[in-house]
Image 1 (cartoon, rainbow, N blue to C red):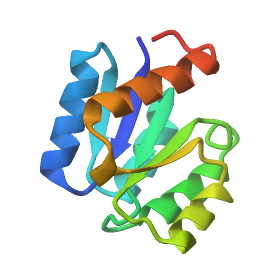
Image 2: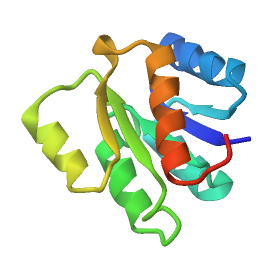
Image 3: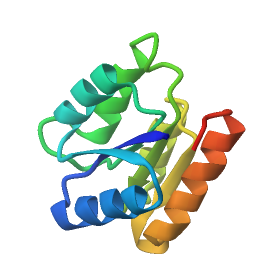
Length: 127
């Protein structure tokens, strides 16, 4: 079973995404800030990570930078899942080797699960 970590400070949205992934058979780790996200990622080694940019304690870009400093974290697939659509945020994320930059408001949770399954199958991860 694939493990997904979701870091998002919008509690209702976080709960919704976590439930949709669980309903589809994923083991799910849901955290509400970048600090918890980084700690959980390095401890749990999920198969893929979804990160919002605007979060307390440590924003998503900072979390991703620190994650990429770790030998394991350097290679884990990461999706930025955010409502920020500015060129600077997209550019900063792309430089940190993300797989996709998804705007939450333009995508529903089912589409995101499908996208994650595609990425994991491309990386030969058992779903």
